[in-house]
Image (cartoon, rainbow, N blue to C red; front, side):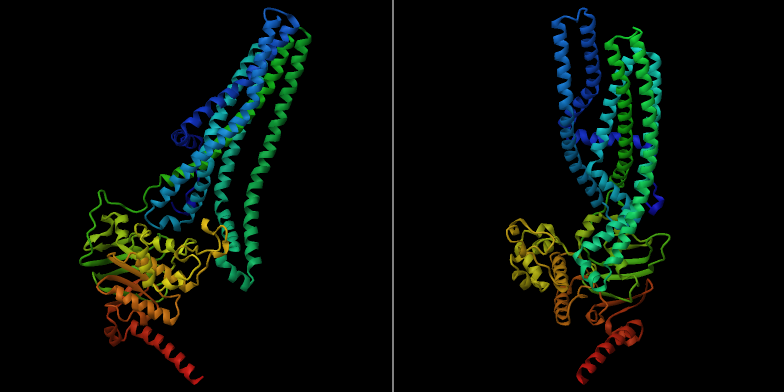
Length: 622
């Protein structure tokens, strides 16, 4: 999917195909509820027609006698009419409850399937595609209740159709011409409602990106992470203005659709009123002329109103179902998207790393519209050795890490594991062999145990392993001193059930403490074949940085590791130092050799060291 070129389809035939998966989802999820719901909805369609004919028979019996004019016959008719009235009174409440129960059951399964499909996206490409993110947001909306809306729309349409057919049959017996007039007046309603539903579905797609930007600004204005800068820099009013501007643009698009609907529906309503009025005048005249009985007049009046009301309801149900199907198309597109990375069938077994990892003539760019990030990179990471990657911002270091973790595949070239292309392995098994600390590490609003245990869920309940990982990251003492120790909620946004009576126990860590926690998460995976450390100490003070890199040096000994850091003093002990510039490897050797060469690395190292020396000299003079 490529940005806004991925347009929503609005063809009725294409949308109708969504009925089958939505219905199947409801049938598998809540078969009993769906069965009762179908029975109640279909019965509801026949009740108005039944009530009209019972009323006719009672009135004709009262006025003209006949076989049903006796007290016993009228009593049974009255009893039937009362029963129909009772069912009509109960049916709306019952359908409301069944609909809500069906929505809850189906929505739960639909949401689980949606995020299971999202979790199966092995790469990052779709999460960095604005067009797909718009589709994903609509899919999330669809998962909440759209399958139930589709089922409800289909059943509501069938119920209204039953009412329409019943009343049309009744009218045809009394006046074929009036039947055709009433039916002809209802067809434009149906056509107009379907056209309006398609227009509204297109509007939802067109404003998707606008609303996502509005949510972005609202999240900024209400998030703890952004609160400091917004208040210090006084940008709240500016961001609020942009949020309101996005809302106004979305409102304008919705208003245009609403205005069009209002005009069209008003015109159709006026047409329906004229037909009903004309039919009533004809019926009164026919009754006065003796061509219709009182009961016939009752059925005719009820039939005209019933057909018009049922046709309007049918049009509304069809339109709502059609709109829901168009939205549900986004859900089926996401859940049916499949893996976004090439997978080998069957995948090759992934052996432990013995020789090393190689990038062979690797070229990479994020799309054909983007510039090349990596340009013919050749790199060897020997097994059991430490490699450091340095370079200016934008040199391609983090992109190279994404390729090693196979979040993306190279545009050209290959990444090899002991000589085998990574694309030949199962990506899940590959990532089980990799530990990492990313520069943009996560801060989970969970307990300290969870924050570390998410590094390896199989070890989460092994408290000794969690504690050892925290000790190696230098964060154990701080965690142990928290109100609930490792069970302390590291958030002021949520609280745990045990904190319900004292919600002040939640704790927010400092930036350096969060970084140590991310390191502990990586240390929990210390038995992996490859450890990737992307700026693992960028948020630490000098003493903490020294402590962490000392621990990392012990950890990297005889292990395969890739270390990325802008602080060149932290990488000087690596077995191999690789210098990236403009997406190319320009130098690689150990620290001593690179310094003797006097190239890019020596220039950067000398420049950085001179800055430290100047700072130290200035401190002494002061």
